[in-house]
Image 1 (cartoon, chains in turn orange, yellow):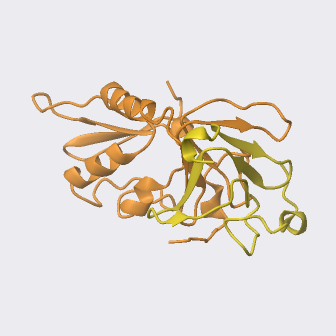
Image 2 (cartoon, chains in turn purple, cyan):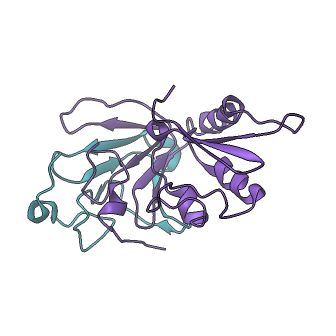
Length: 159
Length: 66
């Protein structure tokens, strides 16, 4: 378990946040800044939108960094491991697909599909089906994004 | 060469420089607009290029360090 895992709840659901799993794809805060705002503390405001809307965005998280569960017994439950499986199977479909590079507004390059990465030392890096590369120059996890583009106020978009 | 005969995409991190991409890949903006590219591209990693998303050599001026 991620020791930095955090939980945020409203009356109906609890959202789980695993920072070590986040690839900073920026999907959550681009689509629902009222709830997911990295500049605020806590960064998730569960009163910022309806439960349905929050669930909708949590499901769009490309990794298991964001998951949710219902608080009360008797409701249809989606525990974090289950949502994780569904996301995993979606990523499995990315296998054998051409790599798609997405230039995120004010954020990293998010790559999904079948690809390999060669590090700056010429060695192959860990294999995965989705990753985000830093494009602001400030990450401390080079070549990957660590979210530093927000601190740097990096702005660029081709939309 | 059509897409099917292309090799799996390869991302090569050039030390203190751009990200070299070859093989079977597509490049898109956040909202899905496709950007036409050559078969090999160099993507800016330092944030300083005036020709984003592509590298223009600014990493030397910016002092990008891996």
